[in-house]
Image (cartoon, rainbow, N blue to C red; front, side, top):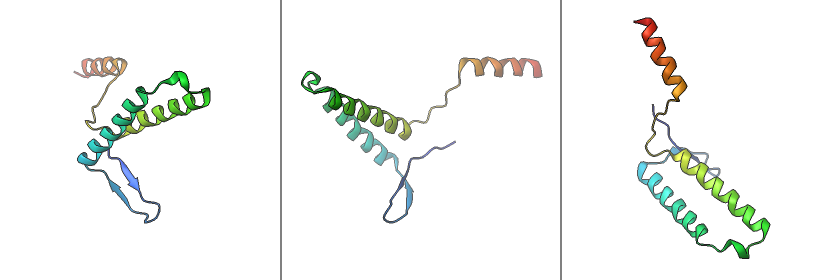
Length: 91
């Protein structure tokens, strides 16, 4: 199963998937931004600015997770137990 990240250009209306090199480059840019935010002195910021930074970090986290470079398949423990029980019952 392959999941891709699709960009849509509003001006052109063209959809295309990012290549793995583009994904890696985008993750690197986002990582640099996170490191830049971590180096900031939050004590000098007011509450509204800290909230904006928190929202930006959440947005970056969502974007990095949506890029999903390795695409691992995860199965919860409950699902794994159910699968094993079904296999035991069937065979």
